Length: 318
Image 1: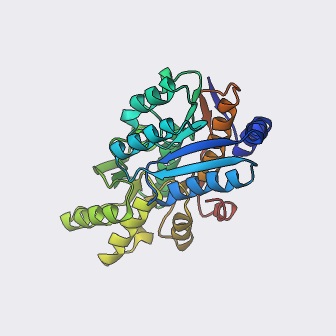
Image 2: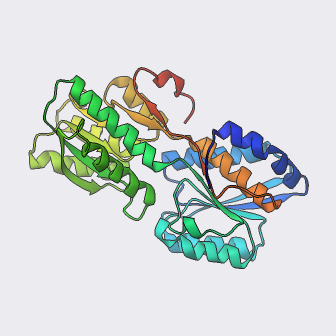
Image 3: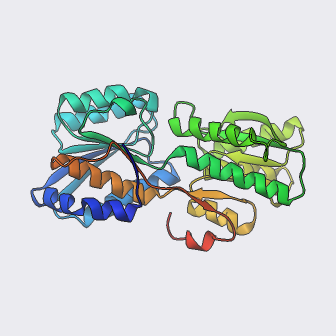
């Protein structure tokens, strides 16, 4: 069963369970894909800050350093330590079946957060997934890019697409969203020149954009799977002596750096993904499952479109 909730609603829904669980003390192991990521830092800190408001809840937070084997070892250590629940932001969403089995065999509740596990449909009863529906993220972004290109008078346009980690479900879905929107009659005037991965990283995106610029193909915009890559593209465009404000560049996450780029006019659109809300929701779900309370298998925190017109509403959220 899928349920769309706001983070505030989920917190209220599970607050009683969290308080009950924390009263008897609970240790939650948190396995993050990597610490060196702006969005995931907000998510991680959201969990840490929320845990501080709950009596007798202890988090053990580990950095997977973008290494699936390291993350699997960390989860094995959580199991050996007999933590009360585990929260996982997976490095490799195609490798989550092994993580699920580890937790299930030890009868430890597990919650995946932000990145959708490949085995979502077969999760056991004491496991769940808390995130935002990626079908909405790239769709909102690309629809706005389409509108902006039309508003600029374009009847024929070409764009580059920057994809996140290739082994990551969110990157796969966001890229598919772009293709789906550009296949619609309203936006079919936009053609994709090339799609390549920049691993969700700013530096990788800057290097990739530099290569594309060197190739010399004229382009009207860049559609990136996240703000970090959009910012890397902007930096490369500026380094090449071009003006990003003359292009339509989109990102996702509405990070503080992304919002700053939006305010400057370099970035035209981003999409707010409530990182702290996802972290709080994942911890609530983990504590609820540890207390024996049923939690929906999929809990969605909605994405929200962010443009210069409404960006003031998001400046302090991520």
